[in-house]
Length: 399
Image (cartoon, rainbow, N blue to C red; front, side):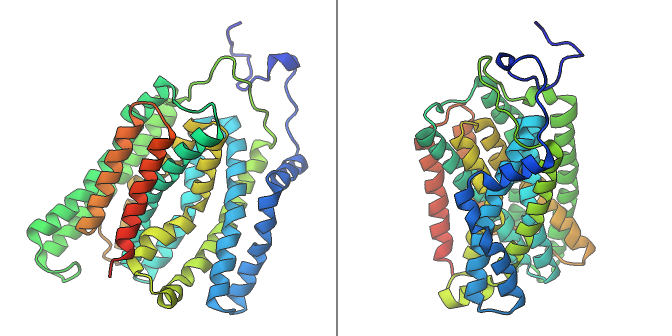
């Protein structure tokens, strides 16, 4: 029987009767969140230890270890809550919501670094977040999905079309807009960035103008995706696929997302505050910290959530989390920080070094080639992870 206006948006499984399922209470929702994956949740003991080590002024290594371990279960809880929200809102809006909450950590770190005048940390951490989501997270999702979920191997044709022809061009646009400042700097700027030359002023004008335009495009992208053409982005479901029952009500799940993100932000902030001293102790290049270590910490939520969704056979949501997060960082967070820097009188630009620009370009190119055919397998996942490791190795030896 075709659906009518009186039909519920999320109908129950007909094998269980036509009566609507009872909405889980707040207590039942919290019990589910606390008990699912309880072994990993045992690491939540490191959350108060992270706060205590920070405020008590313990050794920097302890603050680093406690904060890092605290983020792991918090990211897992964030993934569980996101999955429950996605059951109510759909994969598209659920993936977008998870990307927004996860990237809030990166935004907080970026604003703090911007306020302190650490412009290179802002740039490298944002670029590193894009690379880690496109290569490491997506690669691990393909790899985990194929080996740990035997039913995964291909995406539906419509899903492939969505990512190859409707979403990923936005990522390509952001990549191009980052290449143009680097090309301008190479062609017209003889001195280093920040030397106060006329061409340096032109670089600021290009970056700030581009940032405003990218924010407009991101707003149009959201309006296109969620309003005018929302039907084009709905994940295709198999007709006989068993519907998963929601274990949390949507309001409790959203509240959990907010609280967990705030706590994760504090733990990530404590972790970031120890990176400079840890780098001196371990002799790590600062560029490597910004591009590799910092994004792994700030984007732990997306890392865990995307791989977890792929493990459960939800490749559409896994891609929405990983690639969607990269799009949000490139088209929203990076230009937003440029505008905030403008307001705060910080000369943050969209200029990245030639090597950084090339790393982003080849990453976007490889992901585009692998996603557009609508197939995912463990070899493609291994290829993405290999490129990420090669880039990480290159920055590890950077002076």
